[in-house]
Length: 232
Length: 299
Ligand SMILES: Nc1ncnc2c1ncn2[C@@H]1O[C@H](COP(=O)(O)OP(=O)(O)O)[C@@H](O)[C@H]1O
Ligand SMILES: [Mg+2]
Image (tube, rainbow over all chains, first blue to last red; front, side, top):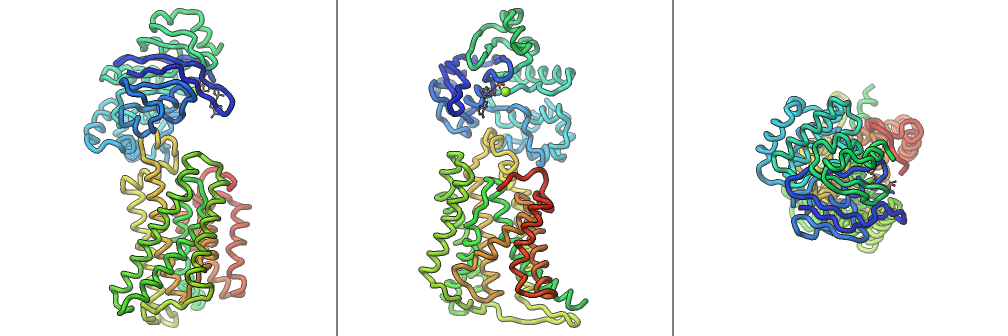
């Protein structure tokens, strides 16, 4: 479904990604792991279109999207939930969700209902400013808002970051549920342990390079993953 | 006491006008962190469009004529605002250019408009036809004119309409989203360039109307008339908290009142100084403005 081919990304003269390639298959959960600063966020931003790579290509459903504007990628079904949730704090929960539905002309009501059945708490908070929600609720809102764009591929950047362990479990449970509804998921995590429990396949980034790639169950017990998870 | 009330009423009209212009500054700052210094000149263009149309109309004082004068001023200043954003700022914004580059372009556009005005109309002030014949009303010993009343009520009406657009339409929602987190709104597929365009259109429409109001109130206009009200409205926006629409409204009225009171009780020669004193005090004491929140970066 998504094919990242040999992309190289630079911030000015500093290279953040070197020859990164991987493929996400339709219907799966693909985990992109790595320590802080490995280049996970940069990879997601390149897929969503916030960054254009200096070299390499990105294909989505066999179409070359490397240079496509962000909005076009969203229309084709790529939606990124960025690091740190980024809810519009002054806008209400409802307004946040409606912004997720901005590009969709029809089916907004239906999508809202679907989102409320996944996250009932959001319905109770509908007219509250998003800034007044708890961290866990904001993460749910951020994911729900992305679902409103009707994604085929959901890019999740460290959804568990800064949440209490119990909430982390909930969030991973929701991710699994969304995946079961048919949404393909590219999950970026430092929390390799949790991510590998729900992922089908995974890749490990180190200093901008993919150093390992394979089935989640194969990666689960490898020493290098354990050390990466600890920050090495 | 009566003198004080009288001055408050006089100040309201100027306050409303400052507020209308300040809204444009603050909205553009909100969505692209730019002080659009050409905004005062859009206001000037509004006044001149009003003049040209008023001179063309046979029956200048009919309600239809008054409506046409305001409508055409609004239409052309809206168009001008859209053009300024599209031709002046858009490509720099796309490239994520440093803010200083955008600011330099803003000053360049401002000079271009002022000098075009000088070329077309000359530097000498022109008197604006009295399309709304003046009437005065007395309440006790307080006097106010129909023009003051029209200006104040129209300002309130326009602010009400603006509020509806910003708070209750899809585009208004997108504007607020872009203002809070531009990158995030892009990730949701919000067409940011259309939002910028819309924001300039909205602010410029209000500035154009304010141009005609000042033209009627003054009642003289010249191609440099946008300079001082433009600066003062900018100061009003900073006073209210740049980026905040209610802030721009409050800042406009506070400045209008303060100016009128200063010229009544101290000396009218202090009137224009006051705004700059306010700017310095705000920047020193409360840089986020009256209604602004959070930290404000250096401009
Ligand atoms: N905006 C930026 N400007 C310059 N360097 C950056 C920027 N964003 C990230 N980097 C650098 O690129 C590398 C990868 O960062 P990032 O993709 O954020 O890593 P991760 O998400 O895995 O923690 C890091 O070395 C980081 O310092
Ligand atoms: Mg990151």
